[in-house]
Length: 189
Image 1 (tube, rainbow, N blue to C red):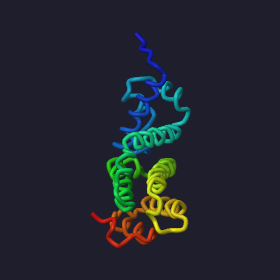
Image 2 (image 1 turned 60 degrees about the vertical axis):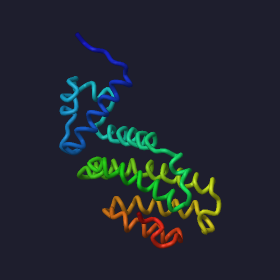
Image 3 (image 1 turned 90 degrees about the vertical axis):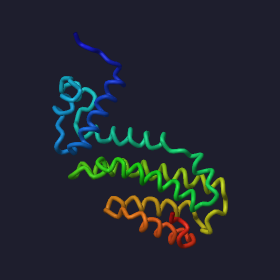
């Protein structure tokens, strides 16, 4: 007997299975057959939802960004007493999420770069949203003429550095302190 599922449920099952397989085997080593076998469905069902294997990367990136956003507490940032504490809270959360899902970010080949390039702007925008919200609630937190623009340059630059392999948090914290004219050591802990 054929089991019919809600299309959104089925689509999510395909995304979840592909994500697990990509993390375990890498994108290049995972075939559509592998995904279909994991779900015990016909390969054609995959293509019904995702006409190309590459399209699933964009969908996984979008789902991942939603998960990250849902798991972050804006109240935690808003409750920080200083901007260095707020930025440490934001950066700490995003770095933890990236490290916990490192296999997604380090998939081999051009598809790993594609995934990272799809997800990077979404994560950067989320981090900026929280940092800028803190600044609006705490005017004067940064002694910069254009703090929002400085944050944009900084967050996007840190994202680029991370993708280039600069993952040392001490380096990142130092760059943030120096770029935003924060006291030396204000982000360490």
